[in-house]
Length: 292
Image (cartoon, rainbow, N blue to C red; front, side, top):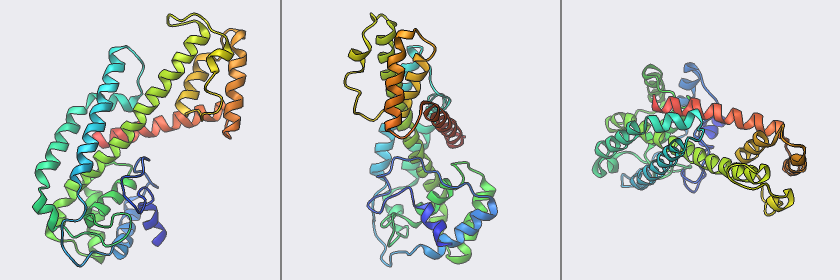
């Protein structure tokens, strides 16, 4: 059972749970498997014998709010410019008011005095943070952020078969669950924005090669200067493939260059396109689950 616990915390390095930018997403568990995991988690989580303030979640919440607001404004600007956006980005921008309200509720529902009384973990990636945060984190990871009240109740009951939670922790389950969902949305929003920037750079480069978007066509070697050594982000490569395939034969050198750069990165254009579409699909499902 211990490997299950390690997977639950694989998203958060020992120094801080906030250092990793990957989505909070692990193997999807059935209800029964989730109950088994809860019992394993309860047996493994050691609580600090001293009550205290611990590490604050308030600073991270403020940071998450700022990142999400920036993502919202970036996506809204792209929509205003009639640029294509991904389904995940559409979910975020259409429901940003829901996210704002949840963040306000978290602040009011988790005052410092209440937070201070929550038992804190003594070790592991969440050392110094409330035990219930680790409980909520694992639930979000193994459900892909999909909330089902019955499944959550079974999960918490299974945890308490091994290690009872305090009344304060039980009240805090809903609050910390929202905290983790907001954290996960922040990570996905960052990816959405970074991919948006990468696609815009690829579009600009393609416009210069093709003589589109008000640009005069430029020689391939001139346009590609500065991209010889840098690793090409997947979103950038996919957009470039999309723009350059089936174009004028004079663009062929640029496609050959792109194939060579991707080969140097250990991949191919088809593989990058497939992986990027898979990531976008997974992001859409997770963002939809969070918002719902």
